[in-house]
Amino acid sequence: MATLLALLAYVLIGCLFIAVSVPLIRGRVKPNPWYGFRVRKTLSDSDTWYAVNAYFGRRFAVVGLLIAAVGLLLSPLGLIPHAGPALYFVVCDLILFACLIAAVVDTFTYLRKF
Image (cartoon, rainbow, N blue to C red; front, side, top):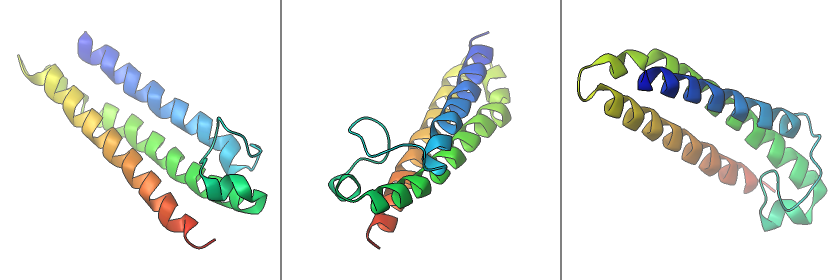
């Protein structure tokens, strides 16, 4: 039961990441202090804001897809007696954080072009 709830949670988290990234990709989010890839360089120039946030949004959407896919594909790990659910949580969380870190680092690398 715990694995089923965790599977649902990872799929929903992935969908949430995708939903949050769509306005960034489409350039619908104006520079603001709450939502987007907010660093001094993006907040000081609107052209940089829209370009970098579209770039980050695409990476964030990919992270969402990966999280949902990993949650689905690794769900059999949760069926292993005793260690299964814990192993499932740890592996999925490690992949989630690694993907998020990679997306942020990649976006900072892209930001150097401006």
